[in-house]
Length: 579
Image 1 (spheres, rainbow, N blue to C red):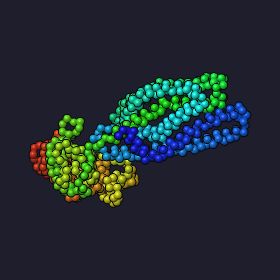
Image 2: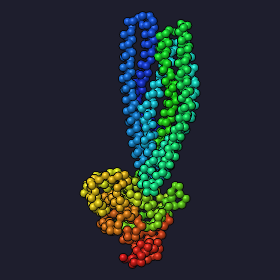
Image 3: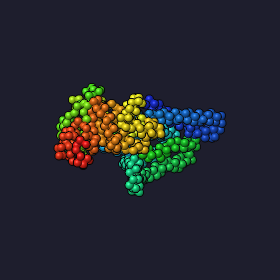
Image 4: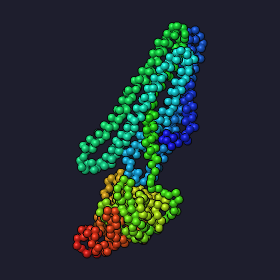
């Protein structure tokens, strides 16, 4: 399917409305040729021959045609606008749904600003094409054809003289079309780049201020802005080269009419009324010639935007639900990794290699290791954010690749390392995974995460609106809200990725006590750098360079003389492991 056919698939449901709009546009074009004809009759018959009784009839006809054209114009434009807004709504909804289905690899490849520009500027270019360009080009092509036909009925020689201009117009239009397309592609690319840069700097404005880099970022923005301006100016240079040609050719028609038409009137080959009629049709010829360059621009803007949106839309996620998934709504929580390795598409080596372990429901697993050792990647494979390149990840004895993605992730509660809170109330953020639950359950989850107290101290309590990404909350407060959100799901598997790094030891101890109360209901994975966060786990995995280099209980590993013992002694000194 081509991008244009894809856009038409959204327009198809409005084809009857579009047909009605085009039919009314045809009626407008037909009525447009009436007034110049009546003007010619008035000049020849009423003024020239003195048949004054025709004047009221002719004026009534002129008024009637004008009113009818106005009604048809309003109705047709309303019809096209309804169609364009309907297509825009359906297309934006479809593309957004597809974006939500994409996997992590997709968002690693595509920048946020680019995706935003697809949903805004590129979508609007398609709406503009449907709402304005289609009927405008269609109407003016009809006017051009009808005007030539009527001029032929007046005088064939005069019509043929005017036709001499059209081949030059067609050649100029073709040459402009060849140059405009790459210019518009460059504009859309630079617009996306500018949009991305602005989005990143607005989101990261606190970092910019913290490092006093405002001047540096302004200079970078100016460079992006200059590149966008240059792309627009380059496209404008193309217009500048061809628009005067279109203006010259359209004005040549006026010259032909005035010189040759006036000569024919003097020679008696046509009447003055005929000249007035042809002059009335003249604008119907000149407007398409003048506007041809602008329409070419609009058409290429449409095709470029359609290609960008379509090329984003057709990118299929590599991680998706199998054709016939294993039906399982509620999981038990048993997890097994069997010789699992994962290598990213653009990586030369495995991120994790030959990882194997097995845990039962009710057990707590601690994962520790240096930065970049693959701890979070192991959990990403469990959630199927990525697919293992070798080995199997099993939940309840079933390969996660055979499970429905929604069912799998719905049974997993995850408090992520990078805490993200929506611009919503605190209650809305906690209840994000279970929006239909009662307020009491929200409050209970907040109590378990030791968040209830500071939430109640806020001006509006649980109805307090948190800013974008949790602005206004401390790191520890955001972590506790994120933990409450994960706990409220009542998951079969709970993943805590460095969730208590920003809280004090007392709060961490309280949270660990609360987790013990739900331990029998689910399997808990805790990724941490603090030994205190995982020392009571049933199984501790020590990772290094993508491999499990040690595994066992705290008592076993604290005497093994490896990474874990070194980390334990670094954090606790030479205390006994029981302290």
